[in-house]
Length: 169
Ligand SMILES: [Zn+2]
Image (cartoon, rainbow, N blue to C red; front, side, top):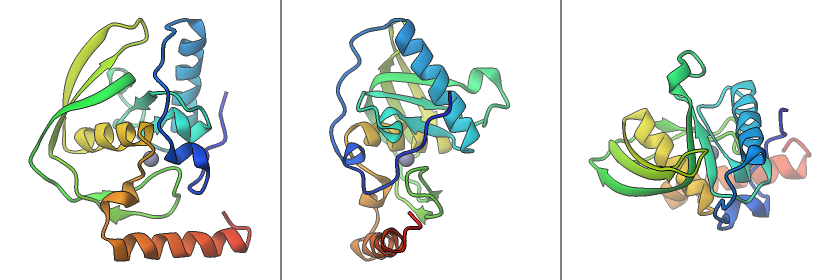
């Protein structure tokens, strides 16, 4: 099932999501739906709050479905180590058509649980490190524009407000 993606401006995107406590069939179904929704939207990552579900859960695939082992599920993820800095273009399915050079670490290590509740750690580099940070941020109510200069952030917010007024958002 493809969910509609919640856009910037909705409260669910800016609140702390609740930990996942049940590792059951419902969680599996939700994760399958999240992958389907992410691929349909041509995204490389999707966090549960972006489909209106305030839970600490996200899916990532920086290969865009091209490699089966590119599918990553992070349940209750935490960034436990970072190294270096990069400033590539970043975007977000909840802020469609806005992209900006966003500072992030080059390496990021995430500790998370899988669908069975088992803990694992994984270190990502480049785009994967960016995805780990971006998606984990979502679970803490943080959007990528928070990492931009105030000038850049305010400019994006202004454009979104305009689109909201004209009903294009
Ligand atoms: Zn996002």
